[in-house]
Image (cartoon, rainbow, N blue to C red; front, side, top):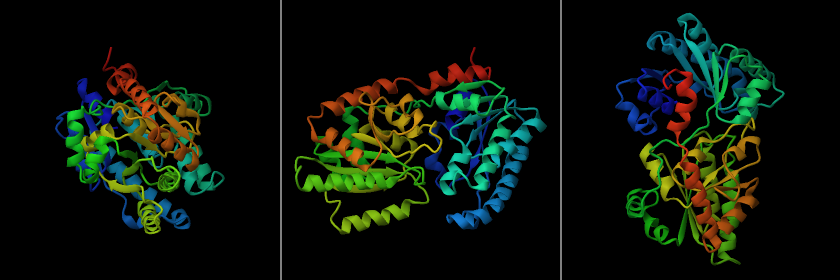
Length: 406
């Protein structure tokens, strides 16, 4: 949504950017937004901790209370803090209660509602409960009904566009707007690569060996949620380390930097510590980081391989992290067992696909244990894919929809 705001402002529009206030807002916020006078940031009161149930059974009871609190918070933000606008652009998910509140506010203020579909809320809820659960079925119907309130729809993939048209029977225009990297995701020139390696605390002690290629740097950005199975990466690296210490001593050491925050982070950090104590990760070092936008972009540009653990709950969404990696010229190894994956990643051209830990381990061995030609070819493919930028895609689709681009 930050990219949408910047694009609208770039073409002369005024934007109220509404979202939850985060304790790390300074690092999460795009650097150009805070300094843009055309964009006003409006904070939604965050949900109290006691309503954030991690337990499945508690969720059933606390969930409705959480929805009531969010309904009130969004109503205040959209109905009172934000100014009336010609367009109301809302990202989905989250669906409940966002879509309903946005629909009512759009009606009362005579705004045109545009839903920016990144996934489906009911498929994400099914990860926590089950597809057959009553709350999931209610969420699915709710999403269908609320979709009828929109004046237009944007989808991140062609596959999702087909679902909205076919299954949701949308009467309003449905436009495919693929995520593309923003301008700040760029490959680093060689002179700046070593300087950044030495500057970033998470990798500074490996700067020399990474620069020489003796240590391989992999990066994975995760929200530490059930739709990203971090155990696949962990298992693959345990297998890789074992081979590097025994039958394949030519395999280089790996430093894996994992960025992001989320509910399962502490659980996996405990697992990593246990494996380290058992000497099962002797050739692998894990580092976690929460980085600013500029630092994250630079980290991607100096890495050897990006890893995407995103398992699409719907089969038709795509992880934005892969788009950013391509923008930095970073090839990707990712979970590819879903319909929309091939819209972004071309296996053997700009990345590689896996469906389990064994497959990821094989990819790491192929790319890091050979002469480097395959990895270089993938990097060149990532660079080509990264030339397709956000501004060009947005102007062609959303800019014309909003009447800001002829």
